[in-house]
Length: 239
Image (cartoon, rainbow, N blue to C red; front, side):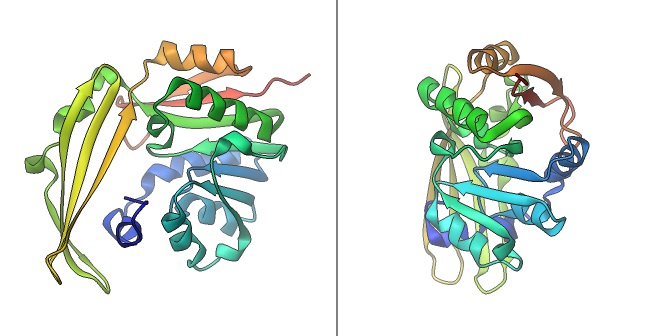
């Protein structure tokens, strides 16, 4: 969605419930994080929540359309916005690096995933934490990605009614491809957004973290989606 400016502008009004971020806010407090890097920050919902609490936040996002939405929000001046990904982050000595929602799963290739983990490692201070979520493949979430279960009509301020639904395109091993369709009632325009997610087993995630130098920590449950996701906590070791 975020590659197209018209679709990027829909993300927040069509996803108003961001209670999924509550667990990340709580972990930032738990770890005493005062400097946070939010990788794949999208339209900035999490980065802005932390910044409003006085946390120093760097929001990193590869899609310019999403960054434009984030930068236009109230309080955006409190966040350092970076166009790019985690593979070229400076040594920020951050207390916490996060990847919320689908961000970790959207990095589908092995080399890109390892480069992301290494980039986050380099941005952390010794003892700092990396936190991200990934759906449990055993729950087969993609089986519910169809028009019948997802069809909705949303009244978007300034835009009008927008129909939306998701359809499964392909399941190829751990890679699941799906397509969202959006139809604008105002002019009849129909736009689509195609994405692929990688569903990693817990053992694979833990092995990747260890290979990139982390101390794999606990795997928590997602409070708002119990039993359906791994919330992975890893730490950069102290010397």
